[in-house]
Amino acid sequence: MIRFGPAGIPLSCKGRTLRDGIADIHHLGLTAMEVQFIKVNPLTRLAMDEEISKISREVVQQLIVSVGPADHQGGRPTLEALTSPIRRRDSLTTLAWSLAKDYADLQQTMSLARALDTDLTLHAPYYVDFFGSADAREQSMRQIEWSGVLAHGLGARLAVTHLGFYGPGDRADSVQELTEIVRDLSDWLSKLSKGSVRLAIEPSGHPDVFGSRDEVLDLVRRVRGTVPVLNLPHLAARERSTFETVDQIEPVVRQFVEATHGPLYLNFSGVEFYGPGEFRLTPIKRGQVRFDPVAELLAERDYDVTVISSSPLLEHDAMYMKLLYERALTRRWTKQHAPPAPRAAPKPVVPPAHSAASGAGRARPRPAKAARPAKPAARKESRSHGRSRHH
Image 1: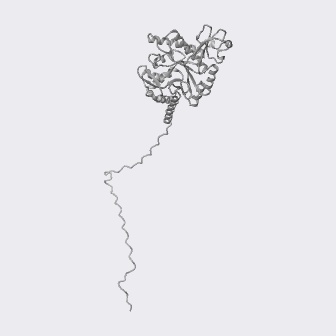
Image 2: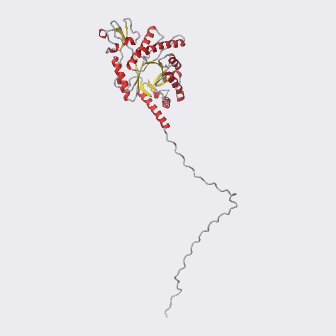
Image 3: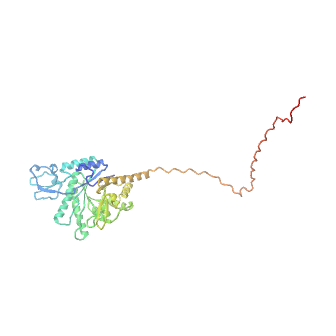
């Protein structure tokens, strides 16, 4: 099955809530959406009297993502704490998120998405730094964990994230340390969601940021519960390749499908690159990487793929990619079901001509004489030679 959708609420959507966006996506004929959890506004405070003995999901007008003792101060969220009654003097971490105000909001959004057959995923905040200060590292960990809590509340199947810059030392050491961080996050997310949400690792187009093709594929093979994101614009910028033909794209898609062990998650937009590590995302028609060969590849093979438009035009380019795929699918169907070519009419058999030698001893038939034309009949009436005399 092939799904198409935008990375965020459609630009043409009149409302700005998640439910408005999902309804608009459904009306446009799309079936996927990547929720953008970009701005993080956490607040850590003590539990109020009216919140005592309630479960965090039952508190209205509050999106609680972590519960712990008084000295918790925004610590790691756990399934046990989030599903246990809040006690006096507990420390609560809440998020002020414009797309949902509490868990009842998330539940309604999940119900609508399932009713309209819209596949939801969630993208964590883009800025991640595991090799800066201790505070930056702790904040990066919490942002990804909070993303997992929200994804679980929405019923999203993936929490998508980047892994940030390499460390100051050897690159291999940075990759090893990031692998251990991802293993810890994946184990935590698996326990929190009971395996319903998986951590998706996205490649990067910048050479100073973790996320080459080989690094992402190797990491997801080593860490259980993670999947790769096939972000073709980022790979194109990193590898300086425009992926112009099906033969160039097929090996890449095959690698990511084998590492995913399930539906492939593909992110696409136009891209323009300049110097090393310098690129920008553009509308698809203006970019240096075309979607046409990708559409041809998806139409020729039975892939299970979700295609997300990260183009500045969002739903417009999602619909454009869907159109290109449907055209490729139509060409494939027409080719497979073309009527057989009409059979040529048999040529008449011409008897062989006799040679002069074979007819040398034979008498040639004389041509029939033409019949002479008949003479006109004689006139019976004789002509008088003179006038008769009367005697």
